[in-house]
Amino acid sequence: MTAGAGLLHIEAPPESLVMSGGLFHGLQLWVNLPAKDKMMAPRYQDIRGGSVQLLTSPDGGALLRVIAGELDGHAGPGITHTPITMIHATVAPGAEVTLPWREDFNGLAYVLAGRGTVGAERRPVRTGQTAVFGAGSSLTVRADEKQDSHTPDLEVVLLGGQPIREPMAHYGPFVMNTKDELMQAFEDFQKGRLGTVPAVHGMTEGGL
Image (cartoon, rainbow, N blue to C red; front, side):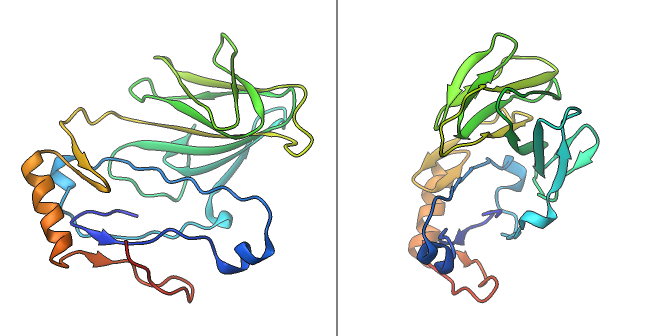
């Protein structure tokens, strides 16, 4: 979703998934827009599992889902307004994967489930932790030989992009470049000037 000039939305799992129970992940990622694009028209993109780019490591030990950006020439369906790469990786116990990474990108790994290590130094990470990579042209992730019984693999989101390096002002869900812009955005919200996300796949709209 691109909020742009302002958008009301609600993030909720499908009712059928809630009723069936079980474990699922909800990951909300906020990516800042460059100042020149802050007031662009809002848009929404629905990316389903079947539309992501699927790749495997050479030894088959890792399944890589390219959601946005590109990995070694393979592009994902997600549209971003600054160069960004987002990958969901499933790494089998004991397997290691090293991915090429743009040197002008930052990089991080967020662990959805499991245990493993990151980087050439093999720094330990586990569920709910984030590792920030230093400068370099690759990212390395390795799954521990033994995982918890309810977590068969290491599940990790790999993310990075080109830093915007612009001033940022934020308050709650509003992110702008200056305090004055922030106050204007809040006023727009209070006066009902923001748009709404259209209902998707029969689901009803919600408010912020």
